Length: 223
Length: 223
Image (cartoon, rainbow over all chains, first blue to last red; front, side, top):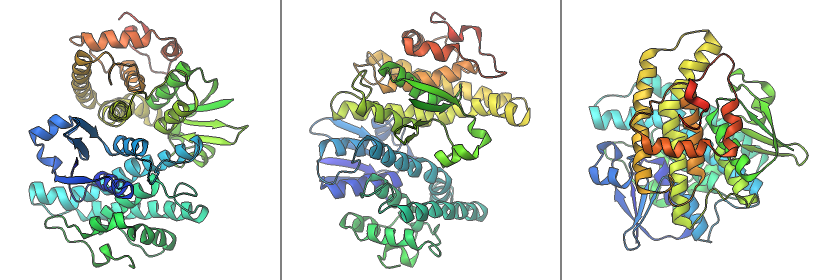
């Protein structure tokens, strides 16, 4: 069976888990804290980052959320994630990259650093200036979500796609870490409520990261 | 005809140009300095980054090097870039992402900032500590290139692929900015010499960025 190396607040692992759930790919979770730089894990992935997927019986290793999602979209027909003609597929990949790179670097990474890594590695408190700045930037990203959803049924067009699952994965981590103010973002809120109610999302929302408590609304579909 | 918005030292635009050259896709270059944040360009791409491709007659806009390369690999059969079975394709995408994200963030971006943006935007000199650090990190990346080429014919496996063109695009920018010390990296040097001798590479090597002179060996196939 496939093994997925991940930790509960890794947005890229969440993206992969949502896709595996939609496609019905059986897998086991392997807890991996990449900041510990475990030798066996760095041997698997020289970048030392989650997610990594391994199929021991077939000797296959897949590394990185986008290569993993493209792999399962090519090999499992159910719940196509990057669909439509080549132009539609380019738009899905553009937005997926926007969330994985821009939203991650500007919001998710600083929040994870302040609220998780500083605590785990140095027993330090978060820098409230960094938190406030990340929340302001998150608000700007949610304006862009609102804009897209004003013009489209789903984030990348008429179909539910990898762009929606990727965005939801990152938003769920930001929300867990208290970085979202939902007021004034009704379109995004409605869309996220639909995403949260999908069966693939439920297991994620039930998990907790050791010592970090999410806000009360975090796992509620109506929030 | 396709228009490609780019500037000479943009590694992501170079990656796209190499792929277009290999595939024989006719296109016009449009010079774009993303740091000027021209309104019409930000309207095209809200991220404000190159490369962007536009086909005015068909009303098509493609944004970002990976979505663009995937698009042309799906629509133009010649010179397949992401080829082989799904596992081989995952490995090509993993390394492409490594170069586009890790190599770019750790080496290309700081060099572009110190040697190009500081000069263009603030008429400042580069910080030699940052340059030295980027060169050390570049050396570590070249060790990884050597390792891969010790075990494989091309970077991602038995076939020339998008991973090779992506790596060559980033290396060419680092080399232009004087960030590479080729001593002790014979495998990478031999591979890069082969990449440089491909017809798609020649136009890139002949171009210059206003006011920045590359080292003498930069455009030579034997260096």
